Amino acid sequence: MSEIFAARLQSARQLRKMSQSELADKTGLQPSAISHFENDRRSPSFDNLKTLANVLNVPTDYLLGRTDSITLTGTTRDELFRHAENMSKNDLDTLTSFAAMLAQKAEQKKKD
Image (cartoon, rainbow, N blue to C red):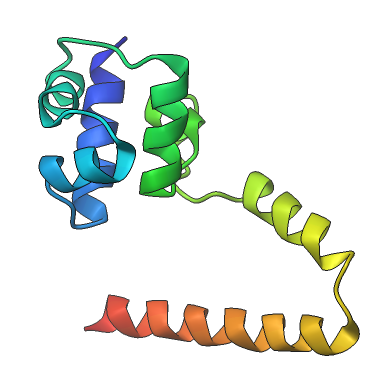
C-alpha cells in the first residue's frame, strides 16, 4: 500500500494505547498481520481496512493518507442523526447530556 498507511496505522494504534496483540484481538486478525501492515510488508484487504479503522475509531481516509483528520466527523455524525430521528425529545436530551459528559471526560484525560 504505502509507507503512509503503515505509519498511520501504528500512530493510531499507539494513540489508542493498544499493543499490536490487543489490536489483533479486537479486529480478529493475527498479531503477525498487524506487524506486517505496520512494517509495510503487506496491505490489508478492504474489509480488514474497514475493521482496523472501526476498531481504532479513525476514518479509512486517514489511514490511507487521503486526509490528515483523525476524527470521524461526517460518518459518525450521519449515524447519530439517522438514529436521532427515531428518538423522543427526552431521549435526545439524555443523549445530549451523555455526549457532553463524554466530551468533558475526554478533555480531562487530555489535561492529565
